[in-house]
Amino acid sequence: MEIRNALEAILFVAETPITAQELAEVVEAPHADVEATLEDIERELTDRQGGFVLRQVGGGWRLYTAPDMLPYVERFAASERATRLSNAALETLAVVAYKQPVSRGQVAEVRGVDSERALHTLERRGLVREIGTAPGPGQAILYGTTELFLEKLGVNTPQDLPPLADHVPPAEIVETLERPFRPEGSSNDSRS
Image 1 (spheres, rainbow, N blue to C red):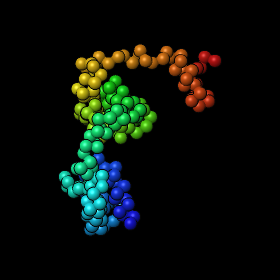
Image 2: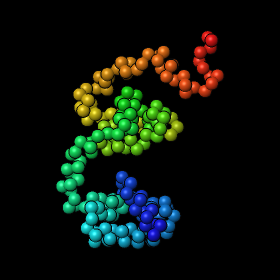
Image 3: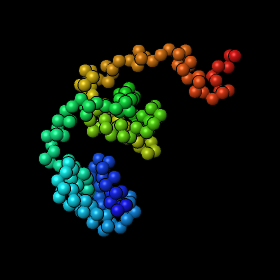
Image 4: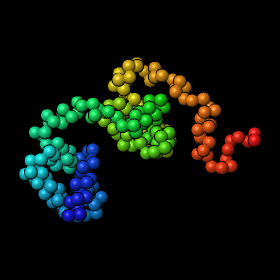
C-alpha cells in the first residue's frame, strides 16, 4: 500500500507525465511493481467514474480531469479565484519584470526564498518565459516577461514600467527599518 500512496501523491503534484522508471527510482521499488500499481490505479479510477483519471501519455503517467467534468472545470477556470496570482507569484513577476534577464537563482536571492514553483506558475500563465542562458559555469536559464504580460499591464516595453524609485522609501527610512535585523556590532554607522 505504501508504494501506491507514494505514487498517488507524486502524480497529484506532477505537472508533466512521469515515466514508470522515474517513479520506480523515486519510490525505490521494482519497475514491474510500479507499472502494475499504475495500471491498477488507472483501472480503478476509470471504473469509479470520478472527477479524475490516470492516463499513460507522452511516455509517462499523469492524472487528468475526467472528460465529463470539463464544463465544471471551465466554469472554475473562468472565475476570479482561479485567475488570481499568489503573493509569491506576484513578487516573482515583479523581480523578473524589473531585473530581466534574470535567473531563478537571482530571483530567489532578491526574494529570499526559492521561487521555482512561482516561476513555473508564471510560465504556465504565459507571463514569463525562458529567454536564454547565462554565460559561464552552469549556464543558468534566464527569464523575461512576455507580450501577454506587457498587454495585461498596458505597456509596450519593459522600459515603460513605472520606475522603482517611485516606490522605494528614502535611505534613512530603509536604514531605520533594517537596523533591528542587523547583528549587534556590525552597524555601518562608524560615526558614533
